[in-house]
Amino acid sequence: MRIDFTRETLPNGLNVIYHVDHSTPVAAVLLWYNVGSKMEQPGRTGFAHLFEHMMFQGSKNVGKGQHFALLEAAGGRGGADINGTTNWDRTNYFEQVPSNQVELALWLEADRMGTLLDAMDQAKLDNQREVVKNERRQSMDNQPYGTWLEKMGEALFPEGHPYHHSVIGSMTDLSAASLTDVENFFKTYYAPNNAVLVIAGDIDVPQVKQMVQKYFGPIPRGPKVPALANTQVPVVIGHQQRYVISDAQAPAPAIYVGYRVPSAKDRRAAAVTLLGDVIGSGRSSRLYDALVRRQQIATNVNAIDLGLADGASELIFIATGKPGANADSLEVAMMAELAGASSFTQAELERARATERFGFVNGLQTTGGFGGRADRLAEGWTFFHDPNHVNNVLAEYDRVTLDELNALGRERLVPTNRAVLIFVPVKKTASAETRTP
Image 1 (cartoon, rainbow, N blue to C red):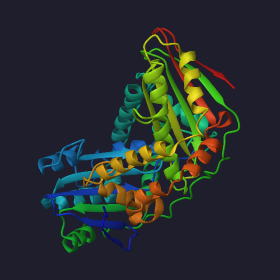
Image 2: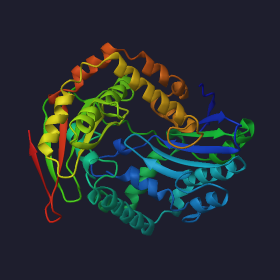
Image 3: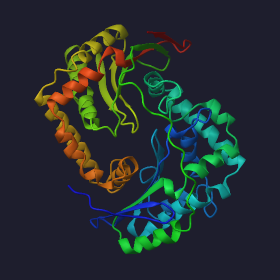
Image 4: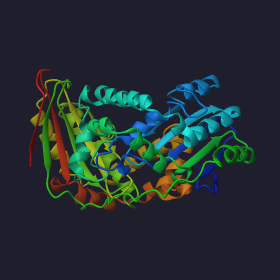
């Protein structure tokens, strides 16, 4: 399945990608800004995610809450079709609308890119700062195992590294942020020369090009974006880190084992994904077979390849025990399986390849949404300066050999390159964390 596209760069530096699909009268408008939490400076963490919220608070010509209201009135669905997300490497905003409403979506995106600061004030900043703090309480602090991702980044990357801190950031940093701090962040990163705009679906490209020029063309180029802080780290951490976390929200023990692995830009990125699949993804994985099916001490296992873009990334394996299960026994069983992570079979590799092929191709059936065509085109430009990357992904999985998979396991899935988080249920009156080397 090949995704065709055309691309242009406006004089102000905005990169624009067009993809045509007339099969349904729907179009996706997606805007990726090349800014994520990795760009944040010490003492200024959480700004990228905060701006995801601020971008829906109104701009010069669009009132607070009107971005959603106008698009929903035009046929879009809030949340599913209209939203924004932030991660370590980028921030994106997207709309999926009836194809006759593309101009509305483009005008709304251009208005907040060009005039958000005209409508920003202290009251909006204070309000959204509290929204983010409440989001942290709901999604992390008061959820079972909710802090695992934050703790894993802190363990796998040294302090000061762009991936050490969480996307949501420090609440202390957010509390200290002034309106001037926030305005400067916007001026630096929310500029046309630091973004890629994708319009995909039932569109007439010459007509849409005129719309893009009309709304985005007048927005001035921003300053040169500061260089990213050094992301290089040793291949392995050098020692095992082990943390026992008392969790008053947890119904059962859970083990999270994370490894430092090659980044999404590394030639071995596809092998990292397949490695995770073989060990921890799905009912055919080694962890599922050992912990859920045979030993029956876990209810669920998983593998998460974060796919971080620069320097190094994280590969995490998760096992959730049965209620009342012994955390030590779960850890021992999990480590026994991970110890054999260099003796894979060709059949395991082929199953993992089939899993990734299905997921990737299935995502491309949609124009918008996560993993859809617009999303993949923006990803290719942002991280590889090549939208055609979408057409090479399956070949990258096919190129991974069994020898390469086993070599990656031997090199990276070793005790001296892992962080272990052990969540232990406790009564709600207790909360503690201990660490062992």
